[in-house]
Length: 177
Image (cartoon, rainbow, N blue to C red; front, side, top):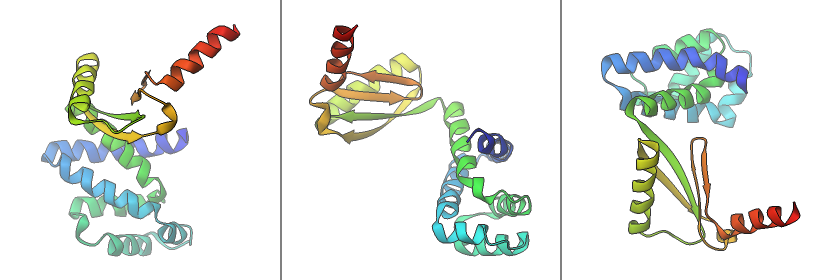
């Protein structure tokens, strides 16, 4: 995994720097997200493992992507194909989006709750997280009834477990020691 990260970093940084220079961060985010989904496709993975020449891989990949990539995006795909790196496109996308979030001072937080949260509860969570993290927060909410009650919030390295299940587990650990 760390090897993929190391290999993907220069591609992500180059794409990010170009996107910032051209003022096209949103467009590049969409292009890389789309291209990374194409690269994850089982059929495309078989093609990437098929031993085709770089120009043929580029042609196949770009024919699948169609109009989704501009000229610069197509050039990135061509360079990555020439270097045999199309398989790491999802990691390039992940790193690009991380750089974008760092620039925009945003963070994505996942909130797992025992019941569906209403707008007021989500607003309160966003407000507290923005205050604590000094960033704009985007929430991804999901429901896990096994929590019994409460929420588990994950934002980057931060984990806040305020679920009854988590509290019971901590109580159990305390009683065991």
